[in-house]
Image 1: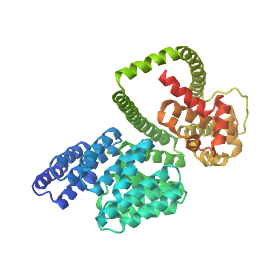
Image 2: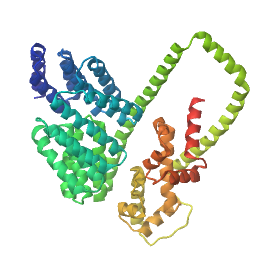
Image 3: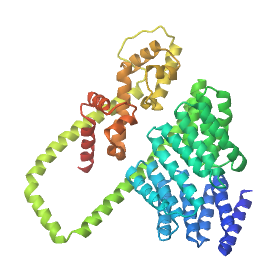
Image 4: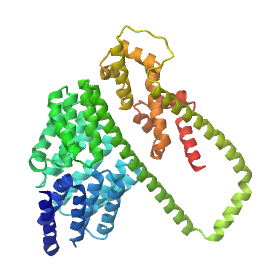
Length: 512
């Protein structure tokens, strides 16, 4: 069956070469994205590349390149997604097709936002805003304005401003309502609103959004990535609305999708939802199975994104060096170098000495945290405290497993984290929870959660350079601490240095 579909697509390409027919092109484009890609990713790429090569109209070529970029984005190969989108940008910016200029710039803004490279994301978003104002065709204008409003909503979503994001998604839907062939855009918009409602705790509204979206996907693209996302998030909404039986229906559909999917970011979220479902059902065996799959996918995504971000920084540094070299003559460079060496050699020696002391201080902090984490993992049941409790050994063991899951799922960075929140998650009471934390972590609740949060951000700062560009208030928000000042105080109490000092030390250490 797949081979027949593939043959049909190839035949369609031949027709496109001769006629460049828009409807035929759009039909093939849709089939590649929503049908072939779900059955055989590699064939979808070949088909998309053939579609690109068979077209001569710039807008079609750009649309084909964005199709390839979208396929790679869904696979979380952000490097190739950005590369193909930039190739599309090179083609379309030499035309006066402002609608596609806007969509290409909007796509690039989204990719850099995914990678948390916000300066580059804003650069392309501003370009998109500029070209959007020049679109004359009303249908194209409405479509682009809706997509731009979605991108603004995405920024709100990532900053946890869910109500603001919902309002913008509703505004985007208003634009989509103004043209025909809008079903996919509206279904996608409903899915995006649904996850916002989940995050605000309005689960019934989320379920309504997903059911509307399913009216389209179940009928026209039941095996698409959008359908997979809707199944996963609808299951999550039912789980959190305490309707596990309904959740299981869509969770099974999501897992079936994940078994044949190559889109690892979506697959990771599916197994995270599976993990939450079995946590609610108290099925430890399946919890750990889902956790293993989720963690494996998370590690793969982090490795891919880290490599791309590192390459991006290296590229920027190289570009900067080349510009500097072109702007200065050899004579000026030599002159400046000599003055620098003669005038600052003594300062350099002193600076290096002080720098090493600072680096050693930070390294001691990191080593201590690393050793403590290793000890906790290898000795989860050991404790220096001789504490007794009325709970049974079986209950104690179960609560310890839940405590480990709580840490592994990084639930401690939730803004709503509190003793009552954790009691609810672990399905216990305050007395038992305090006992488990005291015995196995040797801390009171506040110290325990604060240390988890600070260790989490220390790791991010140490291993992911992009976090060092954040404002202190953004770092506080990342770990669920309510204010800049509270975060700074907590950070200093635990590490002995301020966040800004720590960031400066690590940056200097890398340059040394």
